[in-house]
Length: 455
Ligand code: AMP
Image (cartoon, rainbow, N blue to C red; front, side):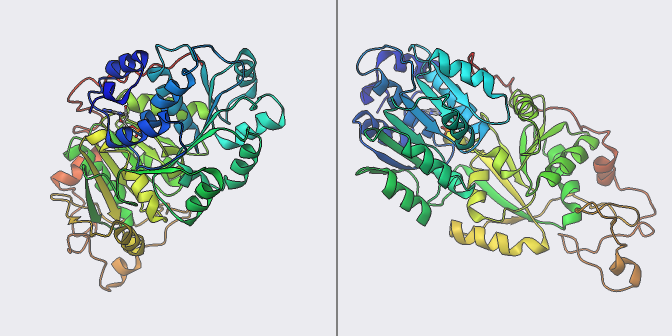
């Protein structure tokens, strides 16, 4: 089956060809005919399956079904949980709709509202928005939703996780009753089912993967590693295995900033994105990462939601997520559209229960691996800051003669005196940062030439 067989108009076929897509992905094959048929749809598709095109292509076609006139007020409204995802969807609209006349914009918080008001005044056919800023526009009467014919909720599960349900209900109450509704969600739970019953009219259920599963193309492994060793192990692996682009997840914003600084110190160019960063800083970090100027991007779950980074090969769960579903979202950043990817999880002693929940959700064990050749540096003994920013107490076990915790390979960590204060070769590699740190091992010049559009 090809895109032509799906009955898409020539402008869309041309755009798809320009993207280099030869065949529709399974979610596209299943969703496009349903949406073209103007039916409501409940799409269960994990991230990276090509679901943005699955709704954007038929949406553009439906908009043009009665001619190619542009509209003063939005005819299509797409709601997404995060600014990054809203931006990405909007970029896809620009790419897939490049031979059609429609105006679109991404509307989200963290940036001044004035520019958005201007775009809305000039006229937009498609608005992609995050719920909070959209409500601001509704309250300020700067957006007119009376012409909306198509509503899409993307990553609806995450919007509910983020507590947007009331905002979403308010937004929906402002829309014309007669419209086509599309709801996409990577995972399913009771709340999603409830929302879909409220929102969708006789929806067609379209599912491409079993619920709560990860893409088969992602190889998943777990390393058992002490908390204090995680950063060293990560630096070691990035250098040893020559990863040139790795997305790292931490549980907290503080943890993301701290780890990014540590990686930079170790000679691995990195940046961090999370809710405490300005929108400009988030956009800049993401752009640099996509362009290959950064080797590592450290992110919290919310900031990384929906990120589409072409051919991302490695995702690291530096901390395991509290919610097992987040694991699926995280590792879905790699292995996209059938490409291979590796998802590496670091599991410390106190994270065993999270690992257990993830394995229960996946309904399988994640293979445990050992980091060959990794020699942990000595445990910190003085004036070190712990994770909470408080001075660490001395490693009592180490100094009291009591048995010490074992490292991941089962050996006891060496003290400074035992190791003669001289780092071993591989430790020098980690601590010295003089070896190959900072070099990029891009097998190809990464051309992320996504059109950014004027809005
Ligand atoms: P999405 O799940 O929408 O975030 O898409 C994941 C990635 O798949 C994006 O980088 C898309 O550009 C890419 N993609 C979407 N459709 C296709 C297709 N039919 N063939 C190849 N790649 C695709």
